[in-house]
Length: 261
Image 1 (cartoon, one colour):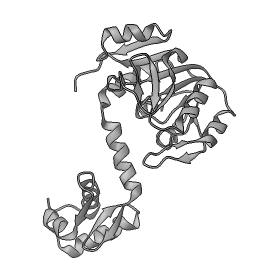
Image 2: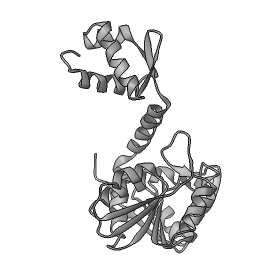
Image 3: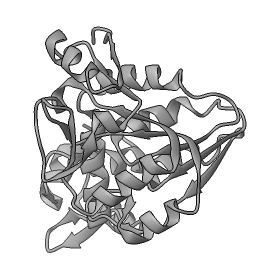
Image 4: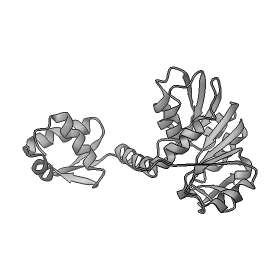
């Protein structure tokens, strides 16, 4: 790799950290076919932006960037399914509504589709959702307070729950870390249980979004059941027998096709 300008080279160095936790100056100089002095200047520039931390002979990612890479990888997992589910969820949002979006990556894909919304109010504890919608002209974003979860760009805890109690909404969209065979909804973060319940409580309707990889599993904390929600949207990779069983909870169950990658 050679003949890159400094901005392109620094972007490539930053992306290199997605594959390994640290790099050395000599490795980078050889890879980009530039002098070690040039690489030192690149690392100094990245450090000034809080993207890397210089070490003896190299650099490592800052915690902020480690979170960013981790979240980016999580968002890319089953991306086609998430986008298909989000597209179906978008059909349930009407102009003028007040909606709650939780901190899941599938609800983030829904946020992307809401940029053309008209007279919408979005209530969210997700920094990623708020960032996605901050410039959407027809969307007012209310970012909830709370404790910043380590390793994830979102807020949770009793402050978040208290903030939710200040509002009412037309519909809540929630993800799930797992959904059991009996329709139980799980989250791996114990602090999120009361927040999830509060999101459902303040809205007239609740829609849960989860792709097939979440089905038939469980996590640490049970936050409720499909019997507590109005709509469940998943993809058609979920067995028909499972979908039929979920329908008996009283929720409207929608399984969407996923376009080939």
